[in-house]
Image: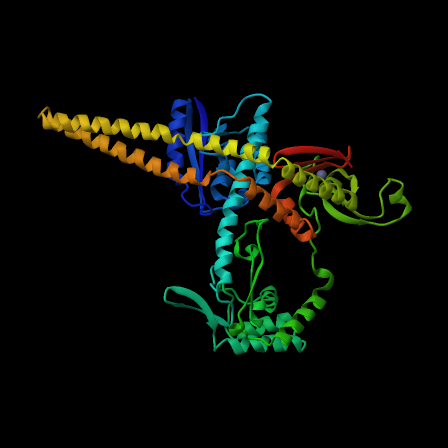
Length: 497
Ligand SMILES: [Zn+2]
Protein backbone atom coordinates (compact mmCIF):
# COMPACT_ATOMS: atom_id res chain seq x y z
CA UNK A 1 0.00 0.00 0.00
CA UNK A 2 1.16 3.50 -0.83
CA UNK A 3 1.30 5.85 2.15
CA UNK A 4 -0.56 9.10 1.62
CA UNK A 5 -1.85 12.19 3.38
CA UNK A 6 -5.27 13.66 2.63
CA UNK A 7 -5.53 17.43 2.26
CA UNK A 8 -8.79 19.38 2.15
CA UNK A 9 -9.49 23.07 1.93
CA UNK A 10 -12.80 24.87 2.18
CA UNK A 11 -12.89 28.51 1.28
CA UNK A 12 -15.58 31.09 1.64
CA UNK A 13 -14.64 32.79 -1.61
CA UNK A 14 -16.87 30.37 -3.44
CA UNK A 15 -20.31 29.33 -2.37
CA UNK A 16 -21.63 25.80 -2.33
CA UNK A 17 -18.30 24.13 -2.10
CA UNK A 18 -17.84 20.64 -0.77
CA UNK A 19 -17.16 20.83 2.95
CA UNK A 20 -13.80 19.62 4.19
CA UNK A 21 -15.42 16.54 5.65
CA UNK A 22 -17.01 15.64 2.32
CA UNK A 23 -13.74 16.17 0.52
CA UNK A 24 -11.96 13.93 3.01
CA UNK A 25 -14.68 11.28 2.69
CA UNK A 26 -14.30 11.19 -1.06
CA UNK A 27 -10.55 11.02 -0.76
CA UNK A 28 -10.93 7.99 1.52
CA UNK A 29 -13.20 6.27 -0.99
CA UNK A 30 -10.66 6.85 -3.72
CA UNK A 31 -7.80 5.70 -1.49
CA UNK A 32 -9.58 2.44 -0.76
CA UNK A 33 -10.05 1.50 -4.38
CA UNK A 34 -6.65 2.74 -5.49
CA UNK A 35 -4.48 1.07 -2.91
CA UNK A 36 -3.52 4.11 -0.84
CA UNK A 37 -3.29 4.12 2.92
CA UNK A 38 -4.23 7.50 4.38
CA UNK A 39 -1.90 7.97 7.33
CA UNK A 40 -2.84 11.51 8.18
CA UNK A 41 -5.37 14.17 7.18
CA UNK A 42 -4.78 17.90 7.04
CA UNK A 43 -7.16 20.74 6.36
CA UNK A 44 -7.55 24.47 6.08
CA UNK A 45 -10.76 26.40 6.33
CA UNK A 46 -11.88 29.73 5.02
CA UNK A 47 -8.56 30.56 3.48
CA UNK A 48 -8.23 31.68 -0.05
CA UNK A 49 -6.31 29.50 -2.50
CA UNK A 50 -4.55 32.67 -3.54
CA UNK A 51 -2.56 32.52 -0.33
CA UNK A 52 0.72 30.66 -0.05
CA UNK A 53 1.47 27.91 2.48
CA UNK A 54 2.78 30.40 5.04
CA UNK A 55 -0.83 31.46 5.61
CA UNK A 56 -2.23 27.94 5.62
CA UNK A 57 -1.70 26.14 8.88
CA UNK A 58 -2.85 22.72 7.62
CA UNK A 59 -0.75 22.79 4.50
CA UNK A 60 2.24 23.93 6.47
CA UNK A 61 2.04 21.09 8.95
CA UNK A 62 1.55 18.67 6.06
CA UNK A 63 4.83 19.79 4.56
CA UNK A 64 6.62 19.68 7.89
CA UNK A 65 5.34 16.26 8.88
CA UNK A 66 5.84 14.28 5.68
CA UNK A 67 9.08 12.77 6.97
CA UNK A 68 7.74 11.97 10.41
CA UNK A 69 4.67 10.14 9.09
CA UNK A 70 6.54 8.85 6.09
CA UNK A 71 4.04 9.50 3.32
CA UNK A 72 4.94 10.03 -0.32
CA UNK A 73 1.59 11.06 -1.75
CA UNK A 74 -0.88 13.87 -1.10
CA UNK A 75 -4.45 13.21 -2.13
CA UNK A 76 -6.74 16.16 -2.81
CA UNK A 77 -10.31 16.27 -4.03
CA UNK A 78 -9.41 18.70 -6.77
CA UNK A 79 -6.23 20.50 -7.77
CA UNK A 80 -7.73 23.89 -7.04
CA UNK A 81 -7.87 22.84 -3.36
CA UNK A 82 -4.17 23.21 -3.49
CA UNK A 83 -3.86 26.60 -5.09
CA UNK A 84 -5.96 28.90 -7.19
CA UNK A 85 -3.14 30.99 -8.44
CA UNK A 86 -0.82 29.41 -10.92
CA UNK A 87 2.18 31.10 -9.38
CA UNK A 88 1.50 29.53 -6.00
CA UNK A 89 0.59 26.18 -7.57
CA UNK A 90 3.86 26.02 -9.44
CA UNK A 91 5.99 27.07 -6.52
CA UNK A 92 4.24 24.58 -4.27
CA UNK A 93 4.55 21.75 -6.71
CA UNK A 94 8.23 22.40 -7.14
CA UNK A 95 8.68 22.38 -3.39
CA UNK A 96 6.74 19.14 -3.01
CA UNK A 97 8.73 17.53 -5.78
CA UNK A 98 11.95 18.40 -4.02
CA UNK A 99 10.54 16.81 -0.87
CA UNK A 100 9.74 13.64 -2.82
CA UNK A 101 5.98 14.14 -2.57
CA UNK A 102 3.48 13.56 -5.34
CA UNK A 103 0.17 15.38 -5.57
CA UNK A 104 -2.86 13.40 -6.74
CA UNK A 105 -6.33 14.74 -7.44
CA UNK A 106 -9.02 12.13 -6.86
CA UNK A 107 -11.28 13.72 -9.46
CA UNK A 108 -8.78 14.77 -12.08
CA UNK A 109 -6.83 12.03 -13.77
CA UNK A 110 -3.46 12.95 -15.19
CA UNK A 111 -1.96 11.16 -18.15
CA UNK A 112 1.55 9.83 -17.80
CA UNK A 113 4.36 10.97 -20.06
CA UNK A 114 4.93 14.27 -21.73
CA UNK A 115 1.34 15.44 -21.99
CA UNK A 116 1.06 15.33 -18.19
CA UNK A 117 2.58 18.77 -17.72
CA UNK A 118 0.25 20.25 -20.29
CA UNK A 119 -2.90 18.81 -18.75
CA UNK A 120 -1.74 19.77 -15.31
CA UNK A 121 -1.17 23.37 -16.27
CA UNK A 122 -4.53 23.43 -17.97
CA UNK A 123 -6.23 22.49 -14.72
CA UNK A 124 -4.38 25.27 -12.98
CA UNK A 125 -5.22 27.75 -15.70
CA UNK A 126 -8.91 26.95 -15.56
CA UNK A 127 -8.98 27.11 -11.77
CA UNK A 128 -7.49 30.55 -11.92
CA UNK A 129 -9.60 31.90 -14.75
CA UNK A 130 -12.62 30.58 -13.07
CA UNK A 131 -12.08 31.99 -9.64
CA UNK A 132 -11.63 35.42 -11.19
CA UNK A 133 -14.94 34.96 -12.82
CA UNK A 134 -16.35 34.36 -9.38
CA UNK A 135 -14.37 37.07 -7.62
CA UNK A 136 -15.42 39.47 -10.32
CA UNK A 137 -19.10 38.69 -9.87
CA UNK A 138 -18.83 39.12 -6.13
CA UNK A 139 -17.02 42.41 -6.60
CA UNK A 140 -19.57 43.59 -9.11
CA UNK A 141 -22.36 43.01 -6.59
CA UNK A 142 -20.45 44.72 -3.81
CA UNK A 143 -19.53 47.66 -5.99
CA UNK A 144 -23.12 48.12 -7.12
CA UNK A 145 -24.33 48.20 -3.54
CA UNK A 146 -21.61 50.62 -2.49
CA UNK A 147 -22.60 52.93 -5.31
CA UNK A 148 -26.13 52.79 -3.95
CA UNK A 149 -24.81 54.06 -0.63
CA UNK A 150 -24.35 50.80 1.26
CA UNK A 151 -21.35 50.31 3.48
CA UNK A 152 -20.70 46.66 2.80
CA UNK A 153 -17.53 45.51 4.51
CA UNK A 154 -16.63 49.01 5.70
CA UNK A 155 -16.11 49.54 9.39
CA UNK A 156 -16.55 52.91 10.94
CA UNK A 157 -13.12 54.57 11.12
CA UNK A 158 -12.15 56.78 14.05
CA UNK A 159 -14.59 59.67 14.22
CA UNK A 160 -17.57 57.64 13.00
CA UNK A 161 -19.79 54.95 14.41
CA UNK A 162 -21.70 52.02 12.98
CA UNK A 163 -25.46 52.17 13.16
CA UNK A 164 -28.04 49.67 12.11
CA UNK A 165 -31.59 50.60 11.30
CA UNK A 166 -34.21 48.69 9.36
CA UNK A 167 -31.66 45.90 9.01
CA UNK A 168 -29.36 48.16 7.01
CA UNK A 169 -25.95 49.00 8.36
CA UNK A 170 -24.33 52.34 7.72
CA UNK A 171 -22.03 54.80 9.43
CA UNK A 172 -22.59 58.25 10.88
CA UNK A 173 -20.36 60.92 12.39
CA UNK A 174 -19.58 60.23 16.04
CA UNK A 175 -20.12 63.57 17.77
CA UNK A 176 -17.74 62.64 20.56
CA UNK A 177 -14.68 61.68 18.58
CA UNK A 178 -15.14 63.71 15.37
CA UNK A 179 -13.81 66.97 16.91
CA UNK A 180 -10.68 65.08 17.82
CA UNK A 181 -10.15 64.00 14.21
CA UNK A 182 -10.37 67.64 13.16
CA UNK A 183 -7.85 68.50 15.87
CA UNK A 184 -5.41 65.86 14.59
CA UNK A 185 -5.60 67.20 11.02
CA UNK A 186 -5.19 70.80 12.16
CA UNK A 187 -2.23 69.95 14.38
CA UNK A 188 -0.64 68.07 11.49
CA UNK A 189 -0.98 70.86 8.95
CA UNK A 190 0.43 73.21 11.62
CA UNK A 191 3.60 71.16 11.76
CA UNK A 192 3.00 68.59 14.49
CA UNK A 193 4.89 65.32 13.95
CA UNK A 194 3.21 61.95 13.45
CA UNK A 195 4.77 60.53 16.61
CA UNK A 196 3.43 63.46 18.68
CA UNK A 197 -0.01 62.93 17.17
CA UNK A 198 0.13 59.23 17.95
CA UNK A 199 1.11 60.02 21.55
CA UNK A 200 -1.73 62.53 21.75
CA UNK A 201 -4.30 59.96 20.60
CA UNK A 202 -2.95 57.34 22.99
CA UNK A 203 -2.98 59.75 25.91
CA UNK A 204 -6.67 60.31 25.34
CA UNK A 205 -7.13 56.55 25.52
CA UNK A 206 -8.10 56.07 21.88
CA UNK A 207 -7.29 52.88 20.02
CA UNK A 208 -7.25 51.74 16.41
CA UNK A 209 -10.14 49.66 15.08
CA UNK A 210 -8.13 46.57 15.88
CA UNK A 211 -7.69 47.66 19.47
CA UNK A 212 -4.03 48.62 19.22
CA UNK A 213 -2.47 51.86 20.42
CA UNK A 214 -1.87 54.41 17.69
CA UNK A 215 1.47 54.08 15.91
CA UNK A 216 3.04 56.49 13.44
CA UNK A 217 1.76 54.29 10.60
CA UNK A 218 -1.75 54.26 12.03
CA UNK A 219 -1.83 58.06 12.22
CA UNK A 220 -0.42 58.32 8.73
CA UNK A 221 -3.11 55.91 7.51
CA UNK A 222 -5.75 57.99 9.26
CA UNK A 223 -4.50 61.19 7.63
CA UNK A 224 -4.94 59.77 4.16
CA UNK A 225 -8.48 58.49 4.62
CA UNK A 226 -10.58 60.49 2.12
CA UNK A 227 -13.74 59.70 4.06
CA UNK A 228 -12.84 62.59 6.40
CA UNK A 229 -13.44 64.98 3.50
CA UNK A 230 -16.67 63.17 2.60
CA UNK A 231 -15.44 60.78 -0.10
CA UNK A 232 -15.64 57.05 0.24
CA UNK A 233 -13.05 55.21 -1.84
CA UNK A 234 -13.53 51.51 -2.05
CA UNK A 235 -11.27 48.97 -3.64
CA UNK A 236 -10.50 45.35 -3.22
CA UNK A 237 -6.96 45.79 -2.06
CA UNK A 238 -8.04 47.25 1.24
CA UNK A 239 -10.99 45.01 1.84
CA UNK A 240 -9.20 41.72 1.29
CA UNK A 241 -7.24 40.55 4.25
CA UNK A 242 -3.80 39.48 3.27
CA UNK A 243 -4.86 38.24 -0.11
CA UNK A 244 -3.67 39.45 -3.44
CA UNK A 245 -5.35 42.19 -5.33
CA UNK A 246 -7.69 40.96 -7.99
CA UNK A 247 -6.79 42.26 -11.46
CA UNK A 248 -10.42 43.04 -12.21
CA UNK A 249 -10.87 45.26 -9.23
CA UNK A 250 -12.56 48.53 -9.88
CA UNK A 251 -11.84 51.46 -7.64
CA UNK A 252 -15.11 53.05 -6.62
CA UNK A 253 -15.47 56.59 -5.37
CA UNK A 254 -18.74 57.71 -3.82
CA UNK A 255 -19.41 61.15 -2.37
CA UNK A 256 -20.88 61.30 1.12
CA UNK A 257 -20.96 65.00 2.03
CA UNK A 258 -22.94 64.14 5.17
CA UNK A 259 -19.83 62.35 6.47
CA UNK A 260 -17.43 65.27 6.10
CA UNK A 261 -15.44 65.88 9.28
CA UNK A 262 -12.43 67.77 7.96
CA UNK A 263 -12.74 70.70 5.53
CA UNK A 264 -11.50 69.48 2.11
CA UNK A 265 -8.84 72.24 1.99
CA UNK A 266 -7.33 71.04 5.26
CA UNK A 267 -7.46 67.45 4.06
CA UNK A 268 -5.66 68.32 0.80
CA UNK A 269 -3.05 70.31 2.69
CA UNK A 270 -2.38 67.33 4.90
CA UNK A 271 -1.83 65.19 1.79
CA UNK A 272 0.68 67.62 0.32
CA UNK A 273 2.56 67.65 3.60
CA UNK A 274 2.48 63.88 3.86
CA UNK A 275 3.90 63.49 0.37
CA UNK A 276 6.61 66.02 1.10
CA UNK A 277 7.57 64.20 4.30
CA UNK A 278 7.54 60.81 2.71
CA UNK A 279 9.50 62.03 -0.29
CA UNK A 280 12.04 59.45 -1.32
CA UNK A 281 10.75 56.96 1.22
CA UNK A 282 7.74 56.15 -0.91
CA UNK A 283 8.22 52.95 -2.80
CA UNK A 284 6.97 53.00 -6.32
CA UNK A 285 5.64 50.02 -8.17
CA UNK A 286 7.60 49.15 -11.24
CA UNK A 287 6.25 46.95 -13.96
CA UNK A 288 7.96 43.67 -13.14
CA UNK A 289 8.39 44.15 -9.40
CA UNK A 290 8.27 40.74 -7.74
CA UNK A 291 7.09 39.02 -10.91
CA UNK A 292 10.13 37.53 -12.65
CA UNK A 293 11.92 34.61 -11.08
CA UNK A 294 15.61 34.00 -11.42
CA UNK A 295 16.00 30.68 -13.23
CA UNK A 296 19.05 29.80 -11.15
CA UNK A 297 17.76 30.25 -7.60
CA UNK A 298 14.02 30.88 -7.90
CA UNK A 299 14.11 34.27 -6.16
CA UNK A 300 12.48 37.25 -7.77
CA UNK A 301 14.75 39.63 -9.60
CA UNK A 302 14.79 43.28 -8.56
CA UNK A 303 15.53 46.60 -10.16
CA UNK A 304 18.77 48.47 -9.60
CA UNK A 305 20.34 51.57 -10.91
CA UNK A 306 23.58 51.04 -12.74
CA UNK A 307 25.90 53.96 -13.33
CA UNK A 308 27.63 54.85 -16.56
CA UNK A 309 31.18 54.14 -15.40
CA UNK A 310 33.66 52.32 -17.58
CA UNK A 311 33.78 49.19 -15.47
CA UNK A 312 30.08 48.62 -15.89
CA UNK A 313 30.16 49.39 -19.56
CA UNK A 314 32.79 46.84 -20.33
CA UNK A 315 30.29 44.12 -19.37
CA UNK A 316 27.94 45.52 -21.93
CA UNK A 317 25.44 46.90 -19.44
CA UNK A 318 23.44 49.88 -20.49
CA UNK A 319 23.62 52.61 -17.91
CA UNK A 320 20.27 53.11 -16.17
CA UNK A 321 17.86 50.73 -14.56
CA UNK A 322 18.57 47.03 -14.75
CA UNK A 323 17.01 43.92 -13.32
CA UNK A 324 19.32 41.64 -11.38
CA UNK A 325 19.15 38.81 -8.84
CA UNK A 326 20.16 39.85 -5.33
CA UNK A 327 20.27 36.32 -4.03
CA UNK A 328 22.67 35.07 -6.70
CA UNK A 329 24.80 38.15 -6.20
CA UNK A 330 25.00 37.51 -2.48
CA UNK A 331 25.58 33.77 -2.68
CA UNK A 332 27.53 33.29 -5.91
CA UNK A 333 29.19 36.66 -5.89
CA UNK A 334 27.72 37.66 -9.20
CA UNK A 335 24.55 37.93 -11.18
CA UNK A 336 23.81 38.88 -14.75
CA UNK A 337 21.64 41.85 -15.62
CA UNK A 338 19.02 42.78 -18.09
CA UNK A 339 17.96 46.31 -18.94
CA UNK A 340 14.62 47.37 -17.52
CA UNK A 341 13.34 49.08 -20.63
CA UNK A 342 14.27 46.17 -22.83
CA UNK A 343 12.51 43.58 -20.67
CA UNK A 344 9.46 45.76 -20.00
CA UNK A 345 9.03 46.41 -23.70
CA UNK A 346 9.31 42.74 -24.51
CA UNK A 347 6.69 41.80 -21.91
CA UNK A 348 4.27 44.50 -23.01
CA UNK A 349 4.61 43.57 -26.68
CA UNK A 350 4.07 39.93 -25.84
CA UNK A 351 0.95 40.63 -23.79
CA UNK A 352 -0.55 42.68 -26.59
CA UNK A 353 0.22 39.92 -29.01
CA UNK A 354 -1.46 37.33 -26.78
CA UNK A 355 -4.53 39.51 -26.26
CA UNK A 356 -4.79 40.06 -29.98
CA UNK A 357 -4.32 36.35 -30.67
CA UNK A 358 -7.12 35.46 -28.29
CA UNK A 359 -9.29 38.14 -29.77
CA UNK A 360 -8.86 36.91 -33.32
CA UNK A 361 -9.22 33.28 -32.27
CA UNK A 362 -11.78 33.87 -29.58
CA UNK A 363 -13.94 30.95 -30.67
CA UNK A 364 -11.22 28.37 -30.38
CA UNK A 365 -10.01 29.86 -27.10
CA UNK A 366 -13.51 29.69 -25.67
CA UNK A 367 -13.95 26.15 -27.01
CA UNK A 368 -10.73 25.15 -25.31
CA UNK A 369 -11.72 26.57 -21.92
CA UNK A 370 -15.25 25.21 -22.20
CA UNK A 371 -14.03 21.74 -23.01
CA UNK A 372 -12.12 21.78 -19.73
CA UNK A 373 -15.21 22.94 -17.89
CA UNK A 374 -17.29 20.26 -19.59
CA UNK A 375 -14.84 17.56 -18.52
CA UNK A 376 -15.03 18.92 -15.04
CA UNK A 377 -18.81 18.76 -15.13
CA UNK A 378 -18.69 15.18 -16.31
CA UNK A 379 -16.46 14.24 -13.44
CA UNK A 380 -19.21 15.35 -11.12
CA UNK A 381 -21.04 12.22 -12.25
CA UNK A 382 -24.51 13.65 -11.83
CA UNK A 383 -26.03 11.03 -14.11
CA UNK A 384 -24.48 8.25 -12.06
CA UNK A 385 -25.90 9.71 -8.84
CA UNK A 386 -29.34 10.03 -10.45
CA UNK A 387 -29.11 6.37 -11.49
CA UNK A 388 -28.17 5.43 -7.94
CA UNK A 389 -31.16 7.27 -6.53
CA UNK A 390 -33.52 5.61 -9.02
CA UNK A 391 -32.07 2.25 -8.06
CA UNK A 392 -32.51 2.91 -4.34
CA UNK A 393 -36.10 4.04 -4.95
CA UNK A 394 -36.79 0.81 -6.77
CA UNK A 395 -35.44 -1.24 -3.88
CA UNK A 396 -37.39 0.78 -1.33
CA UNK A 397 -40.51 0.09 -3.34
CA UNK A 398 -39.82 -3.64 -3.36
CA UNK A 399 -39.23 -3.73 0.37
CA UNK A 400 -42.35 -1.73 1.09
CA UNK A 401 -44.22 -4.21 -1.03
CA UNK A 402 -42.67 -7.16 0.86
CA UNK A 403 -43.55 -5.57 4.19
CA UNK A 404 -47.12 -5.25 3.01
CA UNK A 405 -47.03 -8.97 2.23
CA UNK A 406 -45.95 -9.57 5.88
CA UNK A 407 -42.54 -11.19 5.21
CA UNK A 408 -39.86 -11.05 8.00
CA UNK A 409 -40.87 -7.60 9.13
CA UNK A 410 -37.93 -6.69 11.39
CA UNK A 411 -35.08 -7.38 8.96
CA UNK A 412 -37.05 -5.69 6.22
CA UNK A 413 -37.57 -2.60 8.37
CA UNK A 414 -33.84 -2.44 9.12
CA UNK A 415 -33.04 -2.75 5.45
CA UNK A 416 -35.59 -0.08 4.65
CA UNK A 417 -33.97 2.33 7.06
CA UNK A 418 -30.57 1.58 5.56
CA UNK A 419 -31.85 2.29 2.09
CA UNK A 420 -33.48 5.51 3.18
CA UNK A 421 -30.17 6.68 4.68
CA UNK A 422 -28.39 5.72 1.50
CA UNK A 423 -30.91 7.70 -0.48
CA UNK A 424 -30.47 10.77 1.72
CA UNK A 425 -26.72 10.57 1.23
CA UNK A 426 -27.08 10.27 -2.54
CA UNK A 427 -29.42 13.24 -2.57
CA UNK A 428 -26.97 15.38 -0.62
CA UNK A 429 -24.32 14.35 -3.10
CA UNK A 430 -26.57 15.34 -5.94
CA UNK A 431 -27.31 18.75 -4.45
CA UNK A 432 -23.64 19.47 -3.96
CA UNK A 433 -22.70 18.30 -7.43
CA UNK A 434 -25.46 20.39 -8.97
CA UNK A 435 -24.27 23.44 -7.08
CA UNK A 436 -20.78 22.91 -8.40
CA UNK A 437 -22.09 22.27 -11.88
CA UNK A 438 -23.71 25.69 -11.82
CA UNK A 439 -20.34 27.30 -11.33
CA UNK A 440 -18.93 25.43 -14.29
CA UNK A 441 -21.20 27.08 -16.77
CA UNK A 442 -19.72 27.82 -20.13
CA UNK A 443 -17.94 31.02 -20.96
CA UNK A 444 -19.26 32.94 -23.90
CA UNK A 445 -17.15 34.69 -26.50
CA UNK A 446 -18.67 38.00 -25.37
CA UNK A 447 -17.63 37.36 -21.81
CA UNK A 448 -14.06 36.60 -22.83
CA UNK A 449 -13.92 39.59 -25.17
CA UNK A 450 -15.33 41.85 -22.47
CA UNK A 451 -12.66 40.69 -20.05
CA UNK A 452 -9.99 41.14 -22.67
CA UNK A 453 -11.09 44.74 -23.16
CA UNK A 454 -10.71 45.30 -19.42
CA UNK A 455 -7.32 43.64 -19.38
CA UNK A 456 -6.10 45.63 -22.37
CA UNK A 457 -7.26 48.86 -20.77
CA UNK A 458 -5.31 47.99 -17.67
CA UNK A 459 -2.11 47.61 -19.65
CA UNK A 460 -2.06 51.38 -20.17
CA UNK A 461 -0.74 52.29 -16.76
CA UNK A 462 2.22 50.72 -14.98
CA UNK A 463 0.36 50.09 -11.77
CA UNK A 464 -2.62 48.29 -13.28
CA UNK A 465 -0.45 46.50 -15.85
CA UNK A 466 1.59 45.21 -12.94
CA UNK A 467 -1.59 43.78 -11.38
CA UNK A 468 -2.62 42.10 -14.63
CA UNK A 469 0.82 40.53 -15.06
CA UNK A 470 0.73 39.38 -11.47
CA UNK A 471 -2.61 37.73 -12.10
CA UNK A 472 -2.12 35.93 -15.37
CA UNK A 473 1.55 35.35 -16.03
CA UNK A 474 4.51 33.50 -14.65
CA UNK A 475 7.93 34.69 -15.77
CA UNK A 476 11.44 33.40 -15.39
CA UNK A 477 14.78 34.63 -16.64
CA UNK A 478 18.20 33.06 -16.80
CA UNK A 479 20.50 36.03 -16.36
CA UNK A 480 23.53 34.16 -17.67
CA UNK A 481 22.23 32.50 -20.80
CA UNK A 482 19.80 35.43 -21.11
CA UNK A 483 16.75 33.33 -21.84
CA UNK A 484 13.44 34.78 -20.73
CA UNK A 485 10.36 32.60 -20.33
CA UNK A 486 6.81 33.86 -19.98
CA UNK A 487 3.66 31.78 -19.45
CA UNK A 488 0.27 33.33 -20.16
CA UNK A 489 -2.88 31.20 -20.09
CA UNK A 490 -0.71 28.09 -20.21
CA UNK A 491 1.05 29.28 -23.35
CA UNK A 492 4.78 29.18 -22.86
CA UNK A 493 7.03 31.50 -24.87
CA UNK A 494 10.77 32.03 -24.63
CA UNK A 495 12.85 34.95 -25.78
CA UNK A 496 16.52 35.87 -25.87
CA UNK A 497 17.13 39.08 -23.98
ZN1 LIG B 1 19.19 34.11 -8.56
